[in-house]
Image (cartoon, rainbow, N blue to C red; front, side):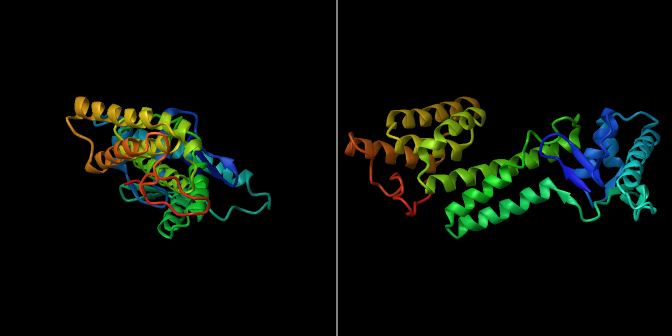
Length: 285
């Protein structure tokens, strides 16, 4: 089974889509797919579908949705097997009924979420080893698996919303690490457009703002770098009642000090200076 969740829902058995067009069976499949090879209780599925106000017929209706999914699976098993013999697995083997629960058995297939997590782990390991070129390349591969928001074409209830937030947070962490690797590689100018968009979208994300400040400073745009700090501080104070972290304040102070000491040239302060070609770089302070 091939499962894609990082964008529009994609679930294929033997290369044939088993994604239904009706919204609620599609929702059931999405939740089973994101928890593939795990037990998903009937209670969880009912909560996802009807948000705490299920109809009296909820369990019967859920069984109907499962039967519809099994019909699609059975068709895919038949049409995807050109040997002429009976399929090795039945639809009930793929979508299994357990006491008070269901399980979608992938049969060792592929999942974009599993591949994403594998690549992120490799990329973070490369970062730990200070292999910044390798980390940037691997993390880009991981992020390229995303074609849109998780479950982009599925109505999401409470359970899928939690899964979507979890996946989005993982994506943001991977993005943060990839930008960190690119800063280590001296790609500050190439990052400016991307960081402009990201800091507008994630207005409270301190590390993205720190990275933007550093990229602007290294590009000779000191006043804009300090303006990013002021915008972040205004947002945090006004909307959250918080001051920027000591780490952000140290970065702002380093830029202020370096600007005062070297008004006409980039600073060679260890925390601010761009890396030499092929050289290392300290993390954002």
